[in-house]
Length: 151
Image 1 (cartoon, rainbow, N blue to C red):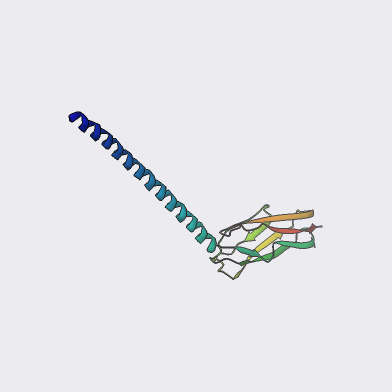
Image 2: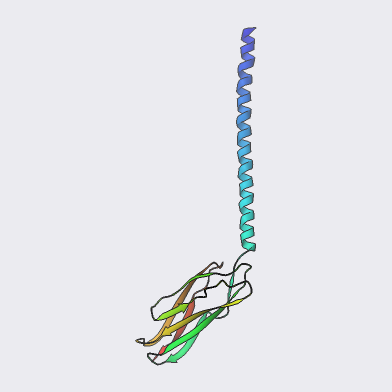
């Protein structure tokens, strides 16, 4: 009788351990799928609440200027998103070009300006200056260009 009892108890113990292991695995898969759904929801929410920029002016051709003249222009853009547009930095590829970024965030639907001053002193011939803007806009802020001739 004891032999039969051991034959019944040992397999029953092994099967009960296996059931718990399967429960654990199924619980992990549920947790992973919940995390995946939450991640997708967060990405969709982020896309709904984006900050986008619509460029009004992205290239300015200042024509022909004499050596030593300063050219100033304000590039215009519009916040086409649903969140405030924050300009973190505006930098030029050359020290002769100085951009001035807006200090306050541009609210949705409003128009903003980035003023750029180009000093043509010591520059000859065709000049093309690029201004890179860092912001919270998605897609990223396109580069701004000043183009012209210095005589």
